Image (cartoon, rainbow, N blue to C red):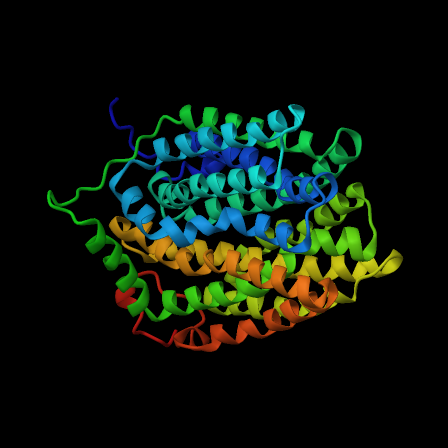
Length: 429
């Protein structure tokens, strides 16, 4: 098929990205898959805890399983994605995820569902997600002009956050009415819808030219060196990894904390997660105004470092009105994390040379997302040994301190982040 040139972000005078057909399809595909994934993020632990009577450690392992592939294949995945066109990779990832999640309700209906089955599905779907997420982030800059790339990122992040609001509520409602296993079926259907939308996109990005004798390990090393030598990407990677230890640590046992320590029902769990996720929607909305008012560098510091101390409200939660503390803490963290992710995502996509983007993304995510299973395993181990609430205190206390990492390096001296690596040495603005 002939290559269709990118529409350069659309004509902003005639509707901008809303008139960009291919972006709309990508947007709908993302919304569909994120809604299903958001449902599953609550439904799978509920299946484990309520249906299969999983322990705290087993629940934490289930939370960690989708993220383990980042540690195993994350780095080579970036090099492979840089060699391929990204849209077919995303379609294949969606199709694989659909079949995997479909196996959960089928196994439950046949009365053969086990914790081992859930772990296997979570791990395999996480493997598909490594390729999808890498290809998705590298695909967007080829689809949109760099002038509207921040707007595109904000719309996608906002939609992702909106789906995180809707998903837990849907999961809780389905769990109450038809069982948590039925909620997983919705995720399988959402991946099917996403694959169809991606298939309908007309734009075909050009394949990046590569040397005839390209070496996989040399290409991986090139991406790692770029991140390790860059003062901005290096600090952002370290911050992402360390903050995820605490962030995912408490989130991995949050369902156990709510169901067994506080004693709320599956439906209330869904409503609480939905309320907390409203912070992500607000974060996506305010990210661009904050960057314009304070600058991208200062805005990122304000969002990330300013929000994390509110995590200390979460272990104070209890029955009745004390649940407000959980919602308030999670809400503010959601605002800061999502707003920071919007600014960070646009920065990486503009700052990194296109031929390196896939490898740079996974080099950063290898540590930042690879820390997720580590945080979950730490929380699961501590939760089994010390109890769930003391572990929540340990995880959230560590999280509050991680914003200090962003003060290392040149970011604290700048108003705005640089647009190209050669500008990185210019500290003043």
